[in-house]
Length: 471
Image (cartoon, rainbow, N blue to C red; front, top):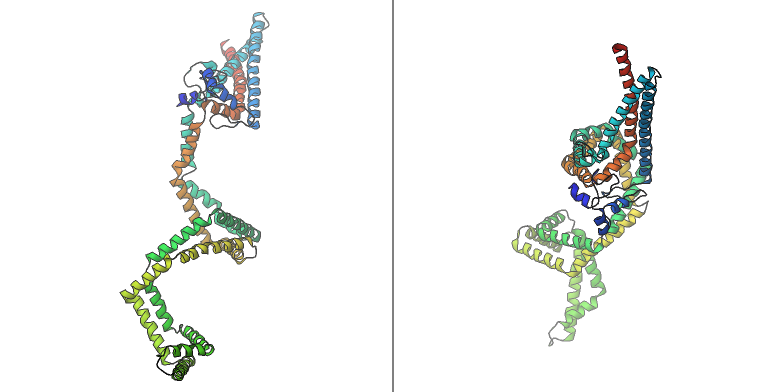
């Protein structure tokens, strides 16, 4: 895999020379942008390097600081080397016994400086380009380090017990209740919910929603037989006398219609008489029929216990029973239902209902004094107050949150840790090494400086002890 990435211009730490030149740099440049060409694309100034890294101005500042610390550590090594040479020269010239102490301290300081230089350099590349085992650790062990990092995060941050303990210590429900109990916070949440609702309704296409609503209503109506339900409802209405007002209305309207259209009724009755009857007879028969009809409707309107009303009650009761238990009646109702739902006018009416509902919801969401927003705000304030005062409710909400969080981290722990390991595996080895060195290299250079100083002190002490006891 490292060879493949190197071919694509990533490079392996220490495998392409100190300047990062790709072994196939000429061919890569001819191919257009790999090798050193791609390395140049990862230069500072906001451009992105291979492997997805982006070098910012802050990164470049850190790299300059690392270079300064390298120069300081290397300069200190050169200083102790010069001190060692001068001390040896002075000792050979007979300057005195003190030169041995200085030379021993300087010699040990050089050894410490070189040892720590090797250790620090071995983290990021091969010292002096030599193929020494267990060097260039970060470039060669990058994928293993990513896997270890993913496992560490999974075991120590994404375990159910850790998440549960952390959430329990935070007390989310109590904090949420206290926060929501403040009117300004409830107003803010209400406004955010309204914005989200308007955004969601704006994103949804009316044609799609209308098709879904129409199909859902039609499917639901087709799947459920409606005759028994209608029969039970009708039976209950008749038993409670709820249909009486409808009968009153029908009788009143029929009476009024007969009063205002008496001539039409008489003319209709007379016009249906045989042609051989005298016209005045037809007229008298028409008048008689009209008067009897008007008397019947008037009595039915004014007499709650009229026999015709009882007949209506019996008819409705029998019809309700047939709707519930008669297969023929139920089959006819189902056919009628299918015919009504299949009509284009009905489907258009169902589809257009979404537009009306959508407009109503959007208007309510935009109006700060709408009943919808006022109710939502009141519900949030009430919830906040209950969460702040009710221990049992807080415990229940905390339990829900803990259970949900534990479910997420335990179910998707592999996907979360894979994000870490896969991301690290996709990084370019050389640029990974440079990025890490830019962030921690300054502190590592202090190790070299400390190694020089500590080595010198240790060498001085060892030499002094050997002189004191061994002559």
